[in-house]
Length: 252
Image (cartoon, rainbow, N blue to C red; front, side, top):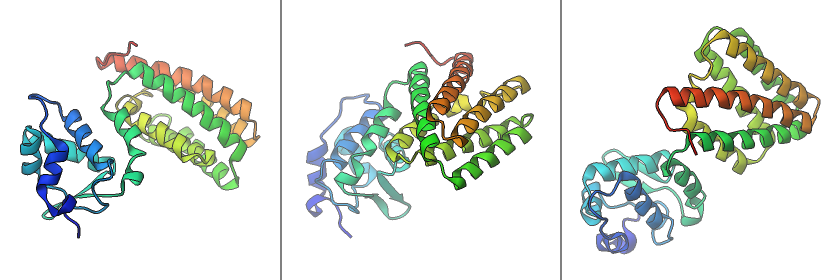
């Protein structure tokens, strides 16, 4: 299996260079990402061990370890216990991940993420109404039944709600669009998991999802988009309220 570029640890050291004292984990990961997507390392290459990366970058091993863990979650590297860390793909395969990485390590502005999520979900609903087949419609119906059955079991309700949105995204048939919204949902998940926490909000969410489903079933793209816009407005209000309660800044 290929090791470091040119089979020499020094090659990667020269490519990385030291970082300023006190550099955050996000910048360590960004520096590694730049190297991994630069085309100088072959797919499947084994990377230098943590201690060598830490020495080269001038940071602690814990910072390197956290950065590699984050990159593993994103599918950039494969950390194998007792073996080492390996690059998962070629530069061209990894480049699309840079957008996702930028979203994850950028300054978190909850209000802006909520707005972006709303726009994406509305467009997904529009596409789903145009493209949903009988299989997707059956899944959406099943998700709605589960939501109705769990209006007083909020964790199960949240799961059924998420399944409904996943089915819509699949129906939309645009992987780039749905990848974006999945990332934003992940960033907002700490709030989304607790956004519906009383029967009034659950019943309201059921009615809003039923309106979306009715429009998708009728292949009414404008109607689906309008129904989703209503849902995103009320869902956004709940998310903003929960973010404020948890002390996360939602301004800007």
